[in-house]
Amino acid sequence: MRIAIGQIMHETNTMFGPPTPVDEFQRQGWETGREILEEETGVRSYLGGMIEAGERHGVKIVPTFSANAHPSGTIERAAFDTMLNNLLAGIRDAGEVDAVCVSLHGAGSAEGIDDIEGTILQAIREQVGPGVPVIATLDLHCHSTDLMIENATALLTVHEYPHVDSYERGFEAVELAVRAVTGTVKPVMHLTRLPMAVAPITSFHGPARMVNERCWEWESKGLLDVTFVHGYPHTDVPIISASVIAVADDDPDLAKRASEDVAGMIWEMREEFRSELPQPADAIREALEHDGQPVVIAEVSDNPGGGSPGSGTHLLRALIEAGVTEATFGFIYDPPTAEQAHDAGVGAEIEVEIGGKIDPANLGDAVRAKAYVKSITDGRYITTSPMGQGGERNLGKMARLVIGGIDVLIGSESHQTIDTGPFLLHGISVDRYKIVALKSQNHFRAGFEPIAAKIIRTDPPGWTTSNLKQLNYQRISRPIWPLDEGVEWSG
Ligand SMILES: [Zn+2]
Image (cartoon, rainbow, N blue to C red; front, side):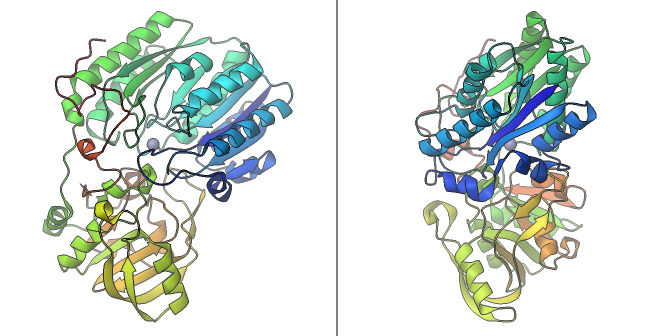
């Protein structure tokens, strides 16, 4: 059996930032054919799982094309067309294949195309015909649409946020494809969409965990998959929603029942998904009052993992103003300041202006300070978080600056912090600090929950605020909870 695999992965924040050109994908993640195997084999990623499942089941995996870039503005149309053409050409050049498995994000938008994943799946379906199973893995921060459902044999979305199960979903995609090819199963899907925009919330605890448990109850009753799709609210397209996708074996009624049951549960408990988080000064006070250390403070509203640049200064400024000394911040995205530190060299004292270069009205003015350059690095390390373990992360030129009593890391790539790697790279053992500040919504949990005495999320102004009412939506479908009052849904 031969299965073609490929990937087009982008979480698009259409509200902020310039359009994303093809060079960003080419710079960050662009592989063809065997390069994909070299990059992904053994990595805890969607494609890593697909490759491993192929080996385990004696399937010939044919790698086609893979592109990904970290979250950013609307994908330029020419960039999208190029990526789609490369993927389709790769699948065509793979010759006769029994199935196609693709890794997609689900919240990608290009100029003129709100739903790139529906468009990709439709194009693959047209090319391979109705008889070939096409299975896609998705991020749970996706917009699930009818176009996707109509053109895929099955959609497998991660269950966990942090997405520690992307490898498992990739693995399952190939396993399910094998079973569909041999006729052991006949996947049928049902999608239930809710008029809800859910601010990012972990599945490790709380309401999202409870919903997952209901999903798994249904799975234990014989469904192939039932997933709570949180949706992605930090963009402005009409298809934003929370939803539930159920995949059953040749039983559309069962898929419908499961999907509607879980959706009903989410709707009933929607108030528990309302997010009210402290401002930085309160978060710092709470951290200092806590007995243990380190206390991790995550600045969720400036999360590069959701399309905010990571250059915001609200939390850093509050730490300096509070006179905190036993603190480290990893990290602030500011390429010119990293460059300045590299030019000055280790041991230099420099005058810096951190942040304030992108949307200062929202993300905060520059922090001007004297800084000591403690260390400089290339920003490359291997991920140890269960999320993406074994993959290389490249944060670009980095510097460890000492400002007052605070060790501040500066990076040159807009990435969230998911594990202690950036700190270790600069000789920082986070358990020596009272406060460890970082920028991430929830993915950091996979790397930090095992070592943090306490976790506090703070939500000053920023592009990925959890206070969705602060965002200037123009195109989202209304009414929608929690932006509008008295929203109704009856199933
Ligand atoms: Zn996600």
